[in-house]
Image 1 (cartoon, rainbow, N blue to C red):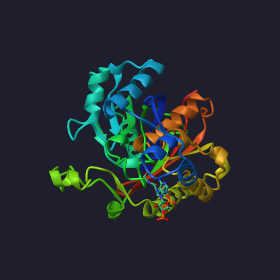
Image 2 (image 1 turned 45 degrees about the vertical axis):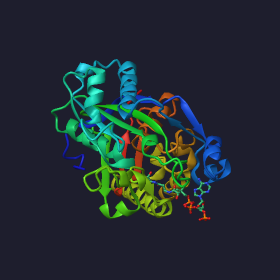
Image 3 (image 1 turned 30 degrees about the horizontal axis):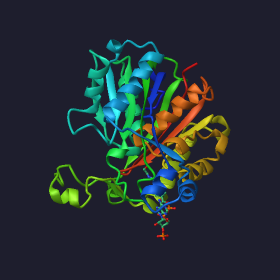
Image 4 (image 1 turned 90 degrees about the vertical axis):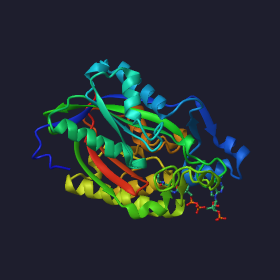
Length: 336
Ligand code: UT7
């Protein structure tokens, strides 16, 4: 990221919104469909429940999150300049989910696009949105993390189906000339050699859909959990520690670590490496599982609305996902 010494404008979060579908899949439900048990799921992952969208698509999740944002921040959709939707479960290859959201909410003057970075999607999209604001041409950018993971999960694969859920959350970015406020710094990375461990092979230009791709379950998410676990801890912790060092942040300066919610053990290991205690880590994995691009903004919205996240709080956001993609962001919370 461009050093904030050279910037004249920061992007800050001035509104939030979220949506999770009503249907709850608890661990007991999985006991009824696969060979698993509540104790294994809780102790290995930290998850108790996740949500599932029964009717509709990712654009419906995203639209409801943005409608919540619009309502709670008195935003006129016509003022929105750009909508960025981070997702790996777009309604379709094209048009982009962002266009569908734009139409649903009547954002008549907006442009928009989807961003594919899996579980790091929200961080990548937030940096993209921040850059539009920092450039000076855009005043209101909506960044959404939304995924309907139930559409690509194989509910006979016990290694993975227990992990994922559906959800969406959104933030509004606006400019500030106070360089001590808003998004201050980011370190984002990708490494395509990680594609063997976490991917969905079918449906794209490499393996266009055929009867064979369906028979071979290539339209489902595949994850080698153990392999991803190791690199996820190292990836998230390394960039987060680097972020603290390059901003002279001690662990006591940080109000909250906001980690991607993939596994409570990964979250704990990352926090340990940063010297951050559990009480300063945002966690809601027990309720929603891994909602991919939505985990980090869902945490932000819930902690803010619960009164735990306060204006001026220094946050480190951290994510790791398919690609591999990973990164860390330093943000000062702007909302009262
Ligand atoms: O968000 C994107 C990034 N993703 C991640 O960060 C996820 C990273 N990985 C993980 O979170 C963990 O690796 C998992 C939760 C996926 C798995 O936990 P683990 O401690 O790595 O378990 P494991 O894969 O080593 O499996 C241990 C055992 C195996 O049995 P054997 O081979 O030792 O007999 C599995 O077959 O647990 C078994 N197992 C299960 N048992 C009950 C796997 N899934 C289940 C299950 N219920 N659902």
